[in-house]
Length: 72
Image 1 (cartoon, rainbow, N blue to C red):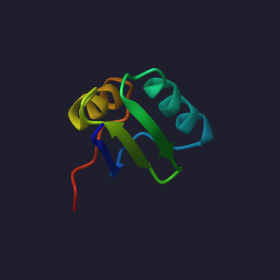
Image 2: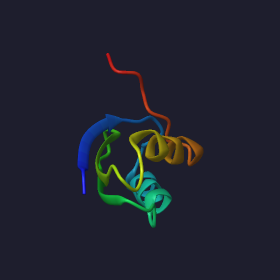
Image 3: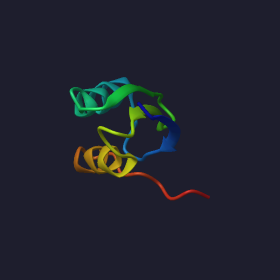
Image 4: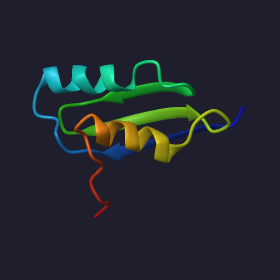
């Protein structure tokens, strides 16, 4: 198992309800081992690289209304 982890910045997080929606969007994503979001739009992810990819997780977030912000 090749576990990867990263913190990304997303837009669309404005309140606690948004954080809950984000968590719900990722719920059940195969290979996702952990996700933690805060009100500043920072999402810390941990996933099994053999079961899913960073791109697949980011795409799921985007489709749920939380697109990744470009790194500054």
